[in-house]
Length: 314
Picture 1: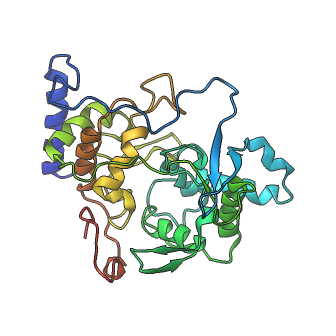
Picture 2 (picture 1 turned 45 degrees about the horizontal axis):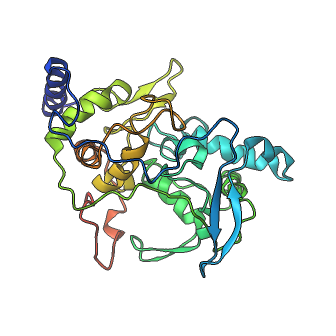
């Protein structure tokens, strides 16, 4: 960590420690917005149903998030379980393909089942699809390998290999019997307002207050005694590279808004959300996305027709 970065975060930490107790609104932050986009807290054991609509808007039978015990009833249960393990424990199980100290499910929350947490629920049924960044139709295998090269700062899997097939099998199982082309009405990400003007200085103070305890003052994350990732790094050599979606301010803010910090309340899948406003999320995202991180070798091929998002890192 260079002196400029250390000074920025250290100053932010000191400002938080020395400031009198006050609400976010009192310190100049906007109050958190209402959590209207995510379902309210559910009773233990309550079945959660989501509407399903086909491409013409016709309602189909509701979707219920499957319980993991149902995997064992599938004829390819071992393959689905392998895919689930690879997504949960990517860095340890696929070290040759991951340069970042992260797992796929560092960003795809609760094994890809959480609304507003980049769920996998619609993934299998929406590919192949047009990708504007690549300006071509991409397959699910293409998309997975894109994540390995960008978010995982690593190398692509063999397209016809067992590991790729296992990941696809898990996503197919999670889709259940939803027809291809139909869509479960679950939100992928919070609709952050991209008109909000980011303030990285304010973001540094918010990072010190709400994020550094888990992700570290230097953004390096935390590992357990065996050297395995427990909290992923947000910048530095072991983080995602500049080609990742999470390296973009507004993309990162959309994730942060409803998923971070964790363990702060009694609702949600891991006690997350309800702390940061939209502006808070944009500010803290602006701070950490612009800290040093690995380059992406294929960046020259992105957005070949222009129309690059304003928060792209290159």
